[in-house]
Length: 436
View (tube, helix red, strand yellow):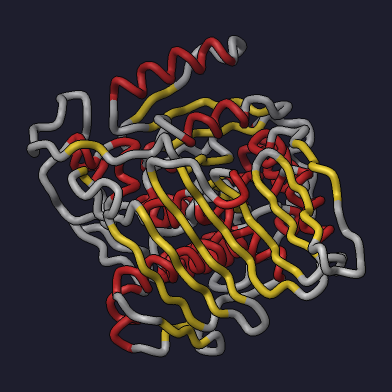
């Protein structure tokens, strides 16, 4: 164990000295050692990732961090039952104490979206490999900073878009790429979530004594505590997230973009609003349609909260509409609907899911660490940042009320006012992103 600790210390010092391109030296140092994991944010997907990590051989979760003491104590007891060989799990409400520990190899960032960039960057600078929940960043500028941090510190970073690790999604893309659908003119991406509804409008209140609300706010604007903006429902407020577009959208748009082998769109326009639940506590739209312009196809995003009747009788999915047929893909499988006028017959049976994406995603992540091979990641920070950028563009078009245009050569919006207002989130309360 001393040899292993010395190696990690040396690698951390070397990484801190890097100014640009990292060097991922080929090494099998982790092939026999236990990888020690800590989780920051354990109430939702942070906990799902924690339990998935435990299913990978020679992985232990040794520390948890959360600003809600009631959640933290509950998760600690659950974790001790899940890994009885570990006699104690340390708990913190300050994530920096996790980063200061030299015996922790991997950090899970499972906090609300407005914390992802800062915690991932700080973890990389502390010499940790990182599994960061989607969306990668809460603004395009944060996404760019996260890529720079990975490059500077030479860490391995996986984004939690676990659909990339499910076989049926890749099988569907292989079929799209085979050309059997003919020219694909339109991709449709929809997300109808009947179980998702905002909370009622309630008065501001004093946070419970077991919640460190000031720390939860972090770099977000200072606001009085309100239960309808907290925990799961942070998703519906611009300070912390981007609604369904950045919650489910990064999963679904990801496959539309991969299927079309596309980069960033040329332009985006969007319409929507609080049409279904105008009386509830929400800033992000409960109904949104966005149109993305690419060189050779259009992409249509369609989302709705509180109802399930989406396209093709599915509450979510991606449709590739080609001259010979339409391929429909969702989390349950995929199928092809033949175009009746097509000469080439492409009908395929419905393919059902046979695997667990999040567990396979974790196996892929740990294997990349053991082999020091970031190129083997299913969703690198570059991949996650790309699709988060596409999703952010849809929200920016909606919020600005403009058709926005993107210059891929300069990696910026053509409208300087849009660039200034929306490219980077403003940080508050003394927090700021490191200068990378």
